[in-house]
Length: 594
Image (cartoon, rainbow, N blue to C red; front, side, top):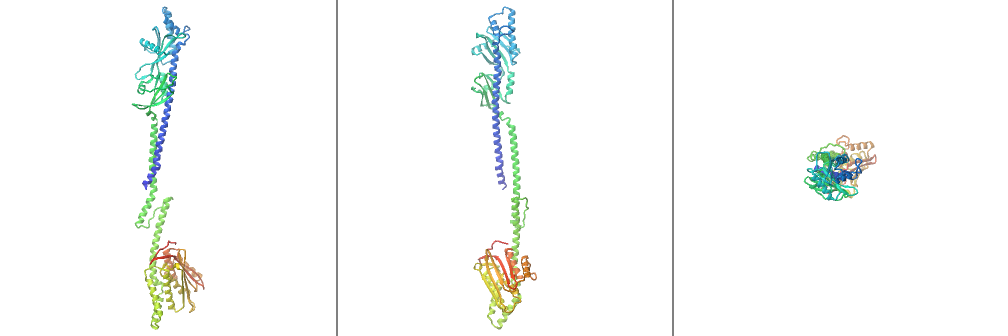
């Protein structure tokens, strides 16, 4: 039973708890991953915005050289560069010096001072003349500048970007712009910015999530910022989309690749975020949740064990008590604890044990009483003096008259003695009435007086079983008490009527003698109800004997009742269960009613 209770508890509580924990964690993890993925897309859009602003400012700054109206209250930068190309002022050292100073002033003031990430600003004119302003000692070879000029012309664009190879991480590039003479589209040369993206790098890193890496592309193929290795290891085809996320496999595991490449922008941003990082923040929560769930399961199992033990302990106690009772220890009792159903069941068991012992004692005492009654039927109920006088009368009649009454008396005595000594305890009512007639005939012959005994038995009760020699003591009481003091020759009239009421047999023995006074009747009834001993002096031995035998056999609901009125007579009513004869000497007793 313990296994069944634990299995039920496990299937109804523990398994649902595990399932709820798994489902809750899976839902939480999925929501967290979705939230992180959304954060990744948001960070990509943020970096895209920063890139467009950053590079847009650099491009706008490079275009200002053609928008400058004047410099040092003189001609514009483009006019000055055109003069240098045309050779004007070179012959005059002062003019040449002033022109050089103006160009360098422009580069320092309008370029380097405005953008701290620009390390070097160079102007190369078509005549090969170069002007530069820089923060470091680095230089660019003339051949490189010539190559840049050729490439920007071939690109047919106003400006272009060229990454500077630096190991596997890009963070520097060249911004190359054509310089045209406004109004004539005359090509004057190129303006080159060498940019180191320290400010942009700080901005990007503050916009990215932990573990997320970004690559900034120009024209969707040139890496200007970020890990070149990532781009070459996981190349993707960038579509004209504001943002999109893809899953890619890499030696480091699955990677969430998210990019932003608007169709109206020259810049594209691609970020790489390992899937392991998606769940990295969930791992502590996962451990905490699993630990809490495990602790709940362990506590639930311990509580289940305690609960099962508390439930089964009274059952085990009751089972052990039943086993002891089955071995003959009929007085076994179980301590009642609590007020639940098991306590009620234990109380019923204890009551059953007590009642069983009481019933066994009653049956045992009834058997002893029955044997004692059978012996006393001849000793106490049949008056020895009566037997002596009867036998003397038989002898005298036999000697003097040879009367046929002597044969009747001898036959009646034989019938009574045979009934008294027979081991059968229950006889039919018809047979008991026959024994009563034999007993009455002996009294009539012995007393030589008129005796009228009438017997009325309903057909339905003739075969009912009654204790043997039950009616004889009642008739004897009539002889001894009812007609004492009556004039000689007054007939003794006794009527026996037997009927059935529901499942009970009622036998009424009525005499029309002196009756019983109220005080004496009360004493007799008190003696019957209190169970006065049969040997108590002054008690009606026959009535008490029969009453006690019946009550011990069937309970307090059965026995003798007496109804009497002085000078009118007495009715002694005997009530027993109506037990029909099944076979010789056997019968079925109805349920105990007492």
